[in-house]
Image 1 (cartoon, rainbow, N blue to C red):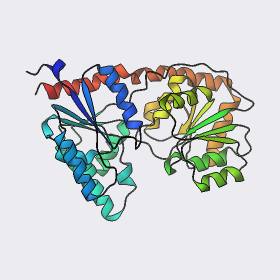
Image 2 (image 1 turned 180 degrees about the vertical axis):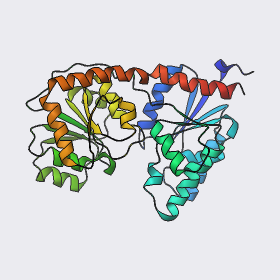
Image 3 (image 1 turned 30 degrees about the horizontal axis):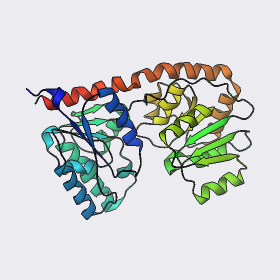
Image 4 (image 1 turned 30 degrees about the vertical axis):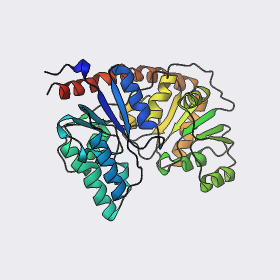
Length: 332
């Protein structure tokens, strides 16, 4: 029998400073666990055979007694010992957005083979697990759903709603974040649109054409992102596709209303404490914004339900679920 208290978890992440969302998630998991760990970052980010092979070798050479591939670099599982390695799958985005030979490549090397080899597999939502069941023909019995935790720093911060000129926070500018329809929906509505993420020239042109008053922030720190939530009145998240949807629970934790797409997994994680809209219909998004701005009762009801919902996403609760898996590996 292994003494679990002496075991150190080795976490594997994508190349450092490429993006930070996954690392933020597991910073909170590690805080809840209060155990010894080390972080390893693969040296390469490009999807080329040589660089992928070097990343696989790097992970194999740095493997420990318990290994956790945290996401995005699922292929690293191919070089890891199966009996003591866990992978966490966030979504099927890279597979869904590929075609032809690339789609076949991602199918086998990002999902099918890593899932087949790993001792344990977790997904961050029931939606992602169901999507794997439909699109990746593998045994899903080994897959357990463990949600992402809300950061400890995200606590209730009451704010008087600005009905005259509300501040609308929109996080993300990639195609799935649906910024273009949000811009169209806000035409003629007095507000300040705060956009987090690098804007394309087309998005800037559309903002100008629709006469939207906006400001833009990029490369913000964790503290600055939290401050954006505190300053805003509405969080805009009518996304077309998500594996989870962190802005939903982050907004709920701070006490802000969310306008979001009526899709999974947003329905699952929000517990319906959100203003749902059809993300493919600008008029539906527009009506949602107008209702949030005009109805204090509606806003207060959503905020109250949102604060209740975030309890199940507290780091200690999520960390305990990972602890059980780590302990199972350690004792085998």
